[in-house]
Image (cartoon, rainbow, N blue to C red; front, side, top):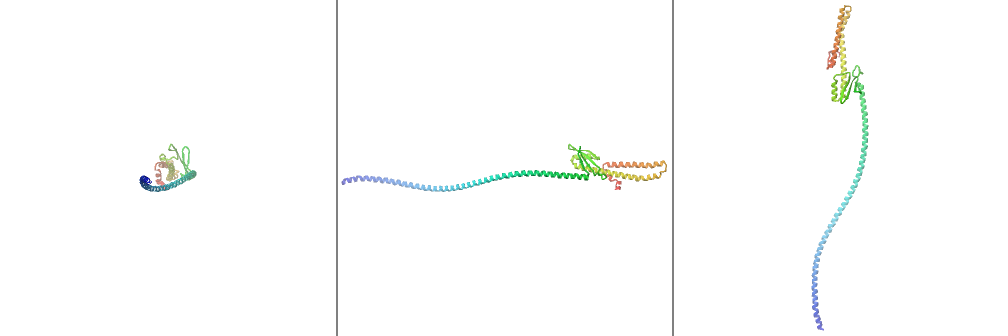
Length: 305
């Protein structure tokens, strides 16, 4: 029994010893693998911590990015609202501008109508004023200068109040304007140097000046005619005064012979001849250039003055 037990023990003990050694070896391997796994786990945990740190940093960056995005989105929303509000204001301003333009157009049309009405009214007023002034001027010329104008084949200008001895005596001339040229058709009474005046009129187109000059010419002609008549009358009075003694002497000798009668008539004939000669001399002096000055410088005329 004992030997069997011991033999069993001897066989079992090495077997168990081998099992224990195998187990120890496997356990050692297991411990090594656990150690290596622990090392790997530690490394992985370090990596995990690093990853967690990076993750936290990423999360922080994400939070920051989200915050930036949120702010940008808020800004975008605010900008969108501002743009929408600005668009609304622009649309409102467009509507207001259109309304203002419509009102402006209406006002412009109203002002244009009022301007046309005002211009028409001013034109009528000016025409009325001009007509009144023209009528007043014509009336003044007719009243003071005896001046009036008649139309026809030409334009006839008539003057009165030229001759102080006969204010109603008319002096006139007729002028025609055709093909940009003035032509003197008639002049009553006739005047000298009218061709030069018409030439100057065609050169300057100064019709009013021409009318004034013609009236002045009429006045000068009348003045010269009056001076001529005055001179003739003075010469006649001088002749009569010089022939008076002869006539008285001839009347005292009325009872003498026929020879004495012939001597009485001869001085009278000679005096008449002298009178006609003086009249021709005075008339030629008035009709010649510088006649007015020659008449004014006459000693007898000075004596009459």
